[in-house]
Length: 115
Image (spheres, rainbow, N blue to C red):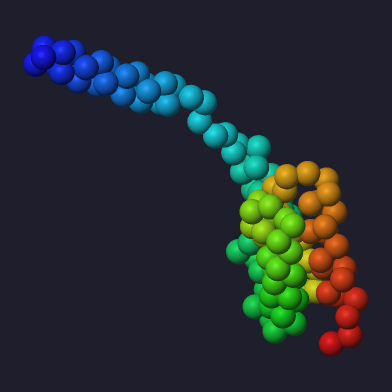
């Protein structure tokens, strides 16, 4: 009985090690293309968000509208909204073209409203 437990314990340990090795051998995410895009001259990044009152108000309204839409995925909810001198830039992945269109409509809807 004791030998059976030892063999079972050894089998579990081997299986765990094999799983850890398989995980370590998986391809790691590669954001090289995204990083190059964001380092390109003239690329808008989140740290360039203006602190002007109008730009902050615009960003806040668009962000709220995107997050309030429960039909959108978590990816779409996490799209970066960057407003600089009234110009809105949206950056980030979405799951499909339908979500892309829905997210792109948010700035147009908000900016069309009188303040």
